[in-house]
Length: 109
Image (cartoon, rainbow, N blue to C red; front, side):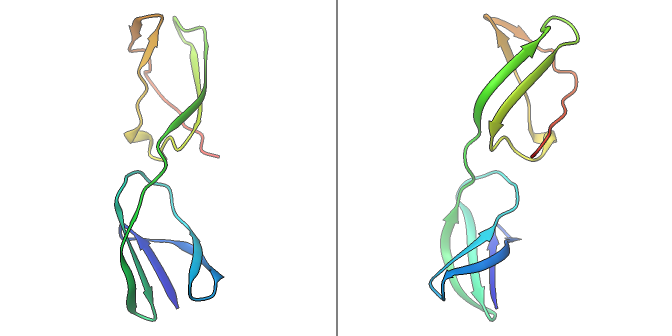
């Protein structure tokens, strides 16, 4: 039985792509780099000197509708995080700083 943990969190749906040589698994959402990876098989650690990094955030598109009052800002991208409490948005519109995000809603596909 193969077990994979990244920074103490278990990976799911582990499948060998090459028997006993290469595998794939699903990693839950998260942030960080140089996170420890521990692979065990039947209770024995077979790899623990490996590191994992999540992709850096990438913005693909930003759309602003009615930016002065009651507007909506649409931010489209990848690896933006899964924890809204750790996400912030600073808007600089033509050189003017706007502290206008009073609430934020995140949709994760």
